Amino acid sequence: MQKLQTGIDKIKGVLVSADVITYEFSSAAGKKFALIYVDGLADKELLGELVVKPLAAAQTDEGLEGIRAMLASPEVKEGDDYSVAVNEISYGSAVLLADGEKTYFVIGLTKPPGRAVMEPPTQVAVKGPREGFVEDLKVNCALVRKRLKSPALRLDTVRTGKRSDTAVTVCYLSGVCDPVIPEKLKKQIVCNQIDIVPDSSYVGRFISSRPRSLFKRCAACEKPDIFCAKLCEGRVGLIVDGSPIALTVPYMLVEDFQSAEDYYISAYRATILRILRAVAVIVGIFLPATYVAAQLFKLQLIPLKLLLNISSSVSGLPLSPSVEMFLTLFVLEVLNEASIRMPKYVGLAISIVGALVLGETAVSAGIISTPAIIIVAFSAICLYVVPDLVETTATLRWALLVVAGSIGTFGIVLFACFLICYLVTEQAYGVPLMAPFSPLVPRDLSDGFIKADMRTLSKRPKTLKSRDKVRYKNKK
Image 1 (cartoon, rainbow, N blue to C red):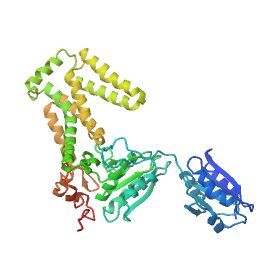
Image 2: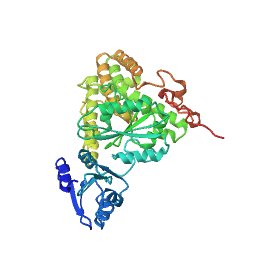
Image 3: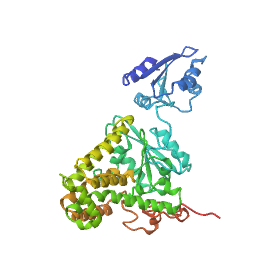
C-alpha cells in the first residue's frame, strides 16, 4: 500500500515545472485521487468528463479493477514504474494516482497544439488531392492509413534525441519492400542520438551514408498521396513528429523531376513537363558560367548579332565579366534571403526595391550590364522549376562560375564530366542515384523522364528490388 502523496512526490520530484498540473479530488466514498498532466498537452475537458466525474461519483471504495471499470477513456494502461509515468506525462498523457494503490493508470487523452491539414506550400498541384502533412505524428499517420487500408501497412515507431525523445515512424508495406531496409533504418535512427531532433532533415543526415555529400540520399515529401504512392512502389517512408516533411528511401535523382500532377494528367503532357524541368535545371546551372566563359575565352560561342548587342551593353563597364556575374548573383541571393526572412508586409517593398531601384540604377550607372541581369534572373527562375534541388543546383552554379572564370569552356566541360562520373557512381541502400539510366534498366524507363500510360506500368520499378513485382493486373 502506498500513500497518495508519496506517488505525487515521486513524479513532481522529477517534473518540477510549473506547467505540470496536479489535480486532487475525492470520490463520494472518500477515496482520494490525483491526476497529473502537462497543461496544454492533455485534453482537460475529456479528462473531466471521462475520468474525474465517474470517480468522483463513486459511492464505494473501489479497488484497481473497480477504478479501471469506471474510467471511460478508450486508452488506459496500468504501470508501477514511476520513471515510465514521468515519460508518459511528458508525451501528453495524464497519470491517475489512487490513495493506497501502488499501481497508477496512464490516461491517453492528449491534445497537443497543432495546425489543421491544408495544402503544402511547395508541392502544389492544380489537379489531385490538396491535403498535406502537418506537424502532428498521429495526424500524419492517419493520413497515410486513410489512403492505404491494406493490412500489410506497417507503422513502426522508434525514438531518437536525448532531450527531445522525438518519435519517428517507419512506414512500409510488408511483402512489397525489401525487409532489410526498414530494420537498417530503425537501427540507424536509434543509434544516432543528439539532444534534439526538431525536423526530419536531422533524421535525413542520420540515415545518409555520406552526410557531407552535396546530393541528398532521401526524398522529401509533403503530400500523403505522393508518400503512399512511393510506399506502394517498394520504398520505405519516415514520418518525424513535429515535422510536416516526410522522407522516403531509397532515393533516385529522377524523382525530383517528377510531380504528383504528372499522374493526374495525360502521359504526353507529363512527358513534356518532365523534359522541360530537366532542360531548365541544366540551363539554370550552366548559363551564367557559359556566358562568362564565352566573354573571356571563347567569343565564337555567341552568335555575331547577339555579340554586337552584348558588346554595346558591356562597353565602359569597370568590372570584368566574372566579377560582374558574381556581383549580380550575390545581389540575387541577398534579395532572395531578404524576401524570405522579412515580414510579409515588407516583402513587396523589398521586391520593388530590388527589381526596380537596384537593377535599373545599377544599369544606368554603368556598374552591371543588362545581359548579366537577364541571365541571372532567368537562371534563378530555371532552378526553381525543381524546388527540391535548389540547394544543390544553386551551389553547383556558384562552383561552375568559379571554374568558368578561371579556366573557361574547357573547365566547364571538365566540371560536367566530373559531375556525371560522380552521379553515376553514387548509390544509397543499394539503389544507384542515377537509376534507371545508369545502370540502364529498360523496364523502368517508362516512368523516368518519359511518362508512359498508367496501364503499361503493370510492374513495380525493378531498381527498387520489390518483393511483389506486380502492381497492376486487369481482371476480366
